[in-house]
Image 1: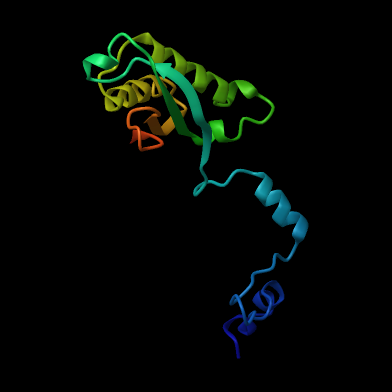
Image 2 (image 1 turned 60 degrees about the vertical axis):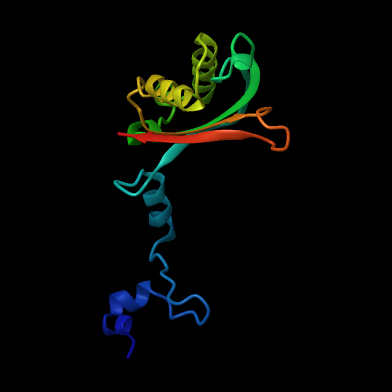
Length: 161
């Protein structure tokens, strides 16, 4: 006897083992399963807002040749949001806006010369964390013309609270 056959209720809810993928759970009521999924889970759920490959010209670098001139960079970011911002519903005021994130990056990059990409990453994270709905930020910043024989060089930076 299979473990699920010991109870008629369990037997009705669980299909027999599938030879390829093991056991397969089947909801007793498909409508109830869909309704349950429509509500946010109490735990185990994440939502991130992403901006990939934002192209900017930035004053960044330690070499004298990098001061006073801009060079092309790309910034990619992933901002994980708090659970209340993950399900804004019809109220978009509760959503974290990717266009606002991109504009924040543009402002921080254009504000001043940054000696290192690491410094720029920290300045971006500091600014992003002024938004309390952001609980984790992952950044990738690449210089596109730093080495003649490389597509890019860069840093990745992550911070969470």
